[in-house]
Image (tube, rainbow, N blue to C red; front, side, top):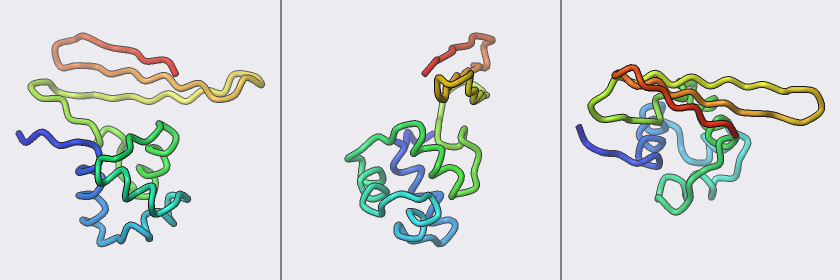
Length: 104
């Protein structure tokens, strides 16, 4: 399997939908130059921006991640406890039964 980075994967998905960078940026509510920087590997987007791009492309967030040699299951849980703002929990389940949780 070819090892692709996030920018290449986003470009592939954008082109598959016949969207220009400008159109994707408008759908995601972000600047076109931001999309360009991501696709050209000059910027790694924050999770909130990645979620906007995912929504604009109408794809599952897991489609941005590749894990060689293991089945992947990526779950995103979004919680907003009280007045403390958003809390992101990312649980990655690997095919070998191991899991990794990232709390943001």
